[in-house]
Image (cartoon, rainbow, N blue to C red; front, top):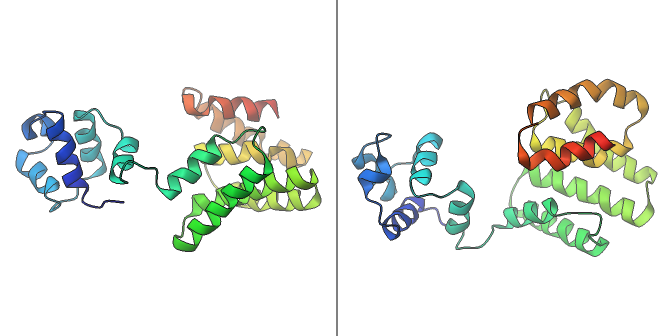
Amino acid sequence: MRWDFGQVYQKIRKSKGISQSQAAGNFCSRGHLSNIEKNKDVPSYELMEHLLRQIDMTFGEFDYICNYYKPSKRKNILVRISKYSSAVDTDELKEIAQLCEEYLQEMEDLPIQNVLNLVRVFIEIRTNGPSEKAYQLADIIWQDLKRRDTWYESDLRMLGAILYSFDFETIQETTGKILDSLARYRDYIDLQKVHFSILSN
């Protein structure tokens, strides 16, 4: 990963024929942008969002470029699990679990730990069906989820994957919170498939 992202930004801006004044607009001074491009200043989230918008680029694409036009190990794991479907074989799941374990040896990362926990549930179900161990693994995820005040996208995805393991009482207790969370995301396209999955369970 390149950490000289100011220089990366400058290279992209220049290659698109956009001046510093055009990129800065009324959001920051040309001098401030110059310092960012020289890696002397670190922009706020709002400023970086503006600067990327000016060069017609998303954070995701910029991150990809800063990683030498490859997905990072972390991104690779997240992409692979997001493409997970019941058609994926057990070997593929074991490969994702291995990637998670290797990554977690290098980096402390709660979302990747959550992915690993979820993949372990999938592997157990594929191997032994809805066994006691599968329910125990799903319960590890549930114990973490149930203490959260609000469920966000990644939480709802995990919830959708383990909902089958809930007893009737737990479903009754959480239905209101599930419906409230889904209502907040009703216009968020990335979550519509999860929305359907949760409601169908």
